[in-house]
Image (cartoon, rainbow, N blue to C red; front, side):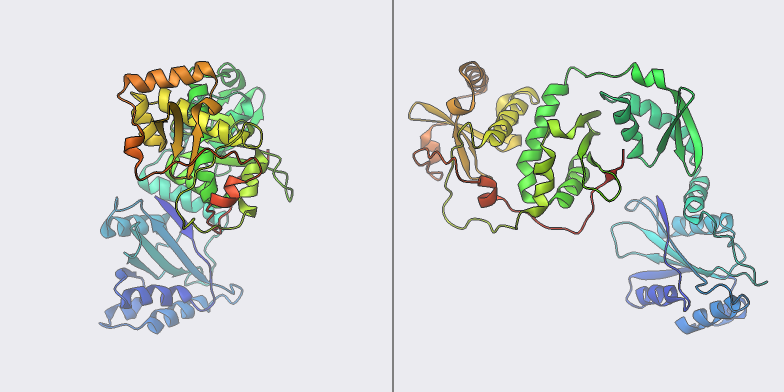
Length: 428
């Protein structure tokens, strides 16, 4: 659950915003409190609420924008409108607004149930309600209402972070920073800070002792690399980073000094509890260049497959090698792995090909792998079933292999979708 303090205004625009929701059946008035004689009237207009709030606010001319407007939102439908209203009332009390005139309006027009609250920052004696560290107090007080223990949460976060595979102390600190904590080192202790307070501490030595790699690191690293190269062409940089977080639970943190371009980045793989140096997965220049490439239209003609030579398209060769490794080592058998990574192996004219229909590409396996790797892949494939032959390819005509060292496949087939989002930047 989250709480957000919204913008102030002089004319109580929040009343209009919420009553408009009500008039279009996207909102429901849940509670009207402390509006005096107005509450005895059967039908109130938006201007009645606005005028009352303006009247109370007029007792302190120094407060130019007296509107207090906040929203409390649940995840999905985990809390209904009545539960959210009870939470809002308790939260308002802790914020100092228990005796203030306020409205609580339930909104039902998004995927997350939430309520809006509108009040005035000026009390009936003309005194301004305390707004110091308001955003921090808002979340602290919501946690108190919900019975959330921040110190206990910080202790759990520390223990969870130590379960990750990381190579440096800075990487371990980043795991906690993605959860909203700040980390400070003092007297051999790492302080975990939130809301301006030290919530928990741990010994530096305890973190340093856990530096190293897990046995699964290289396999998963290959899988993450394959993921990056497969989907990067479909997005610009900001949208790609958001996609990785939303769909795969992978955080990308760009490292930059204030006002400067990023000089590096890190990857936190939360599902597999590992931290990687970004450059080991995809070069920084390649990641940042996604936003510079123009949006491409999907190719309309019949699919044509390009073979990549070992010099001009080394990055793409590594990409497909990573996909094959992921298919072999991360699934019960290679056929399941190929299915989930959307690549295929076919036999034609006594030669084996890897085909990626999504990228409209085919690569002879003997040009992609050395002899030992090729035999390993084919043995695994043979164990899991008969090879599909060209009889099954009647709808996928494969031309004579074309070596195209001067063609940029990403420029031809990439489909970047621009979105106005900003990636997380770490100043470390």
